[in-house]
Image 1 (cartoon, rainbow, N blue to C red):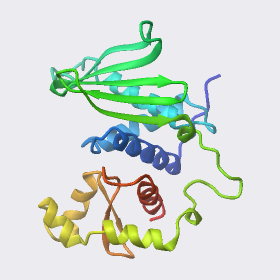
Image 2 (image 1 turned 120 degrees about the vertical axis):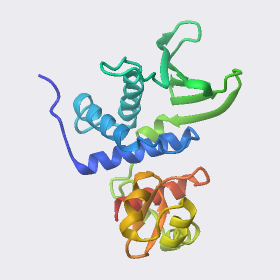
Image 3 (image 1 turned 30 degrees about the vertical axis):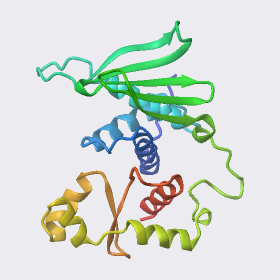
Image 4 (image 1 turned 90 degrees about the vertical axis):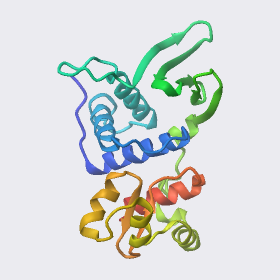
Length: 230
């Protein structure tokens, strides 16, 4: 009998945060088709992973499957796929499990499994390594104190949260001016949310980054917590 599907908004939000962190560690912005990728990975995790003890690794596998699916020819279209899977599986020469993804005109990406977690390497068209990110096994399956859950507000002091809001909060006028959107909430709110880069806190009357290349690990955790709790 197959695994029982466990559908929930909370689970989808957790997967969304994991993907955002993954893309941030890869040094890339949130994709324009962000919501479609999240939905695909969410359904994949619900259908294939353990309904209770699923992990960040299952999300990474779901994202890999999404990439692979983009290389399948569309029945009714001729649009070429941007990503192409050059190789996947066990690399005998290097003795490692890996996925090699051709990224159009921009180069190649390698997703490598190690005993300690995952390595993501990005190479330009000349074969130069331009970025490396590591996802540790300890981060995928963290040891959490029984009395304190990951993401619990007790992990962040009021001072830390206040500093984050001071450094990263933008008024509606500032964000619409920066993005070139209409100033009114009625016209701009959906456009801003559709970028996948910001969330709104009504109590502050401000927009905040979901993730940013300049975020420290602590700031990213605070952003994830604030977004989930609002």
